[in-house]
Picture 1 (cartoon, rainbow, N blue to C red):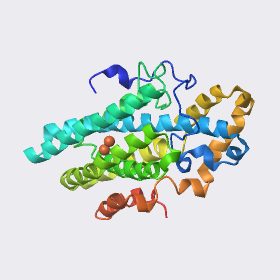
Picture 2: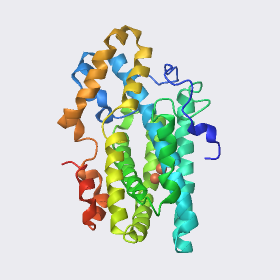
Picture 3: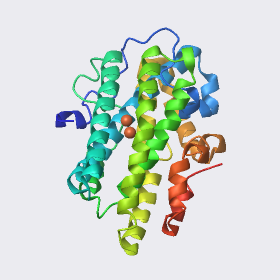
Length: 300
Ligand SMILES: [Fe+2]
Ligand SMILES: [Fe+2]
């Protein structure tokens, strides 16, 4: 992405989604939305549930743009410049071109649904904090010292496939625009996983063991802090949804507490990184013993 403004959190974050939602249709599978696992969800009316689902569906789109543009882009640019063979460098170049295309589809859909809210930026719901936002870009700028970025990339590519299949399996219950972009995204992601494996097979064994161990520690911390339980962004999704349903505002604390209680909800935790959704990551992890701690994230 050439326009750096798009990477800043939008100042309009938190305003209601005024967009062009089609009647009764989901923006995301309920099985991937955290609040749907809480008891409070069953106290909501159908329109209230749908309202939450739609805000969360937009948050999914923001997440994908974040992974593709904020996290993967610096890594891929580094790989284009530093790969040991022209062929590997070309793989990284195609990879980046495809991610740019994907981000443009997701960005287009965000602007289609909520043009005013996304007029000046891609991120209204995703809340990384501006310092974290900048920090997340640093490791990608020197992948030789932080090859863990490639593990993160592989995990998120497999996660994109796992999520994408769940979106497509919703069939006609899902808004056709969401169905179309997630279906299209599914087509390119297997090639990205193949490329991530090529990059890892080059860089990971080439790093000294001490550096690999430091990387695994950092990776485990990053996964726990940002990519496991719904924290900042999960609550921001809830708060944004509540602005559309003022009658629920007095229950804000109840919703926040219910979201926090998910940390001990097995049914929910099993949806995050199921072993069946991450076959390539797990196969590759098994080749290097220092990665054992990473395998603990995957559940039966
Ligand atoms: Fe993608
Ligand atoms: Fe991808």
